[in-house]
Image (cartoon, rainbow, N blue to C red; front, side, top):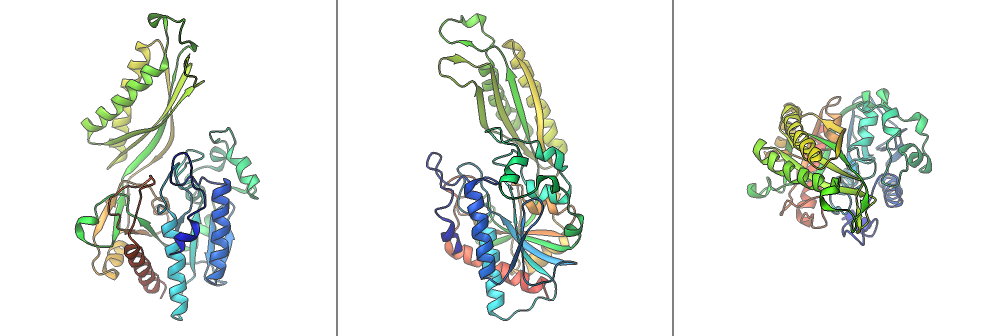
Length: 395
C-alpha cells in the first residue's frame, strides 16, 4: 500500500497520530510526494490558484472530466487513513487502469484538496470552498492560524499568489463528475459484512467560536466572590452543550478550549471554545446552537462576564444524486448505501457537480484519532471498487 510511503510524514509526538495541516511543512512534504507519485503513474500534475492539485491522465482537461481524489491534511493528532486513503487509492486505481491498457473516453484526473479538515485556519474544505466560490477569497485570506499567521501569508510561503485565490468557474465547469473514496467514519458498514459501501449524503454541520470575557487577576489574592472568572462559565457551557444536544437529538462537541493567558496561578481574562454541531438539517443544527448560546449567555452573566459568538462555518445537508449513487452501488455488487455525519469535499462539490462517495469499512468506527484503522484487505477492496467505477464512468 502506498500509505506506507506516508507513514513517517507529520507524526505528532505529543498528541500521537498525525498533525498535517494546510501549508505546513508536513503537508507541503505530502504535496511533493503526491506530485512525484502522480508523475510515476503517468499523470500530469498542476496546482490551481487555491493550492488544490490536479493530476490529469493526459493533455485533455474539461469538459465532462471525471475526477477522483481526496485530501492529505489531517486534524490535530489524526489517523493515517482519513484523506490519504482516498488519494493513494485513486493513484493505485490509475495504475491498475494503465496496466490493463485502459483508455478513458473522457478527461480523467486525481485531485488533492487543500485544508479539508480546517485544522490550521478553522474552516473545513477550504480548497473546495474557494474553488466553488462558496467562500469569498477575501474572507478566507483574513483567517489566521493559532500562531497568528494569515492564510495569505501561508499561501505566499508555499509559492502561491494569494491575490489570485478564489472561485475558478472554468475549472469547475469542466468537471462532469466527482467520486471520492474515504475510510468510513463510523460503523454502519461493519454489520453488513461489506468491505465497501456508498454514501447517501452528509448531515448539516457547522462550527462556532464562543468567547467568554471576564477579568484577569491573581489566583491567590482574589476572593472567590470578587471574581469575574470566565472559566466556570465556559465549563458550564461545555456541559450544557452536551445536555442540550442529547435533548435535541443532535450532536454537539467542544474539542478545543483556549484560556487567555493560560497560567496555572492566573484567573483567565478570557476563554475561547469552539463548538461543532451536527444534525439532519440546518434548521435542527441552528435550533441546537441557539439553545446552547442562550445557556452560555446565562452562565456568563452569572459570573459577571460577557459572551461573544462567531459562526466560523456552516454547511447544509447534502444528498448525493440518486442516479449516481445507485450506479455506484450497482457497480459494486449492490453495495450498502449509508449516510455520514462527517463533512467532505465531495459535499461541497455536490452543489455544482454530480458527486458520490465510496466508503471503506472501518472495523471500530474510530476516526480523527490515532486508532483510526482499515484492514489491508478492505483497503484493497476499495482500490478494486474505485478502479471499477472509474473504468465504467470514464467509458
